[in-house]
Length: 268
Image 1 (cartoon, one colour):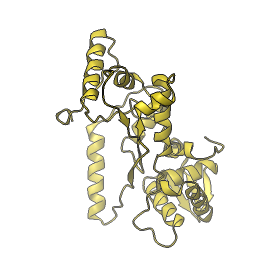
Image 2: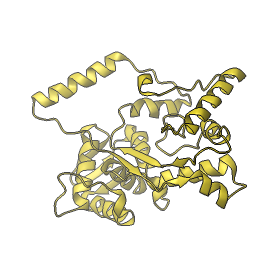
Image 3: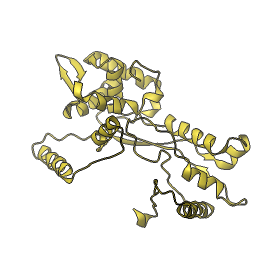
Image 4: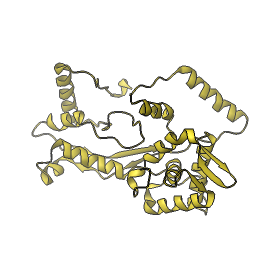
């Protein structure tokens, strides 16, 4: 990763020298026209929701620019996933209130072996979709001209709003949100209806599943439901779909990734 130009931030470093060197490095890279990818939240979300932005790097990027430097253009990029591989670690960390992720190599090895076994038995299903969406670029020069007193904080809010508006709406988050808003249980037809209603509100935000045919929302619901039932997060019996009680936090995690795009429901 470092060979590709990435640099890691020591979040706990309080040294003035380190911060000054970092600020100048960011300023020089910006003045030189280097494309930089910045994660404004500064870390993984423990809840699935968008997090408040960390403004350190953004502040360096804006304040370290030379007066005659070229314009800086921000391109909002939003990602979403049907499955986050470390989701259980993140949910557990949120419940404990500590950002500690005690991953073990044995867990990774067990997961890989299980996937190989499923392939050999012909029972393997893809984990879902990962999607990326790009928002309208924001010129720093135009922003400062239109809102001269906004400062870095207002810039960060504007960028996060644009990122949030572009979050892809995927099958697993849709099914998860439908179940959360219904209190945990829905019959199969009602699930299709709930998913269709949400898709109608954000039609361009949904990448279409490969097996999508003429039934549209039903195919999306079917894909998301299968992904959740295969993991034992949701159960389906006698046409009733319900959240497995001990997995409610997991369902809430995925539902939260798109919650800001819709009207509130009882568990938002």
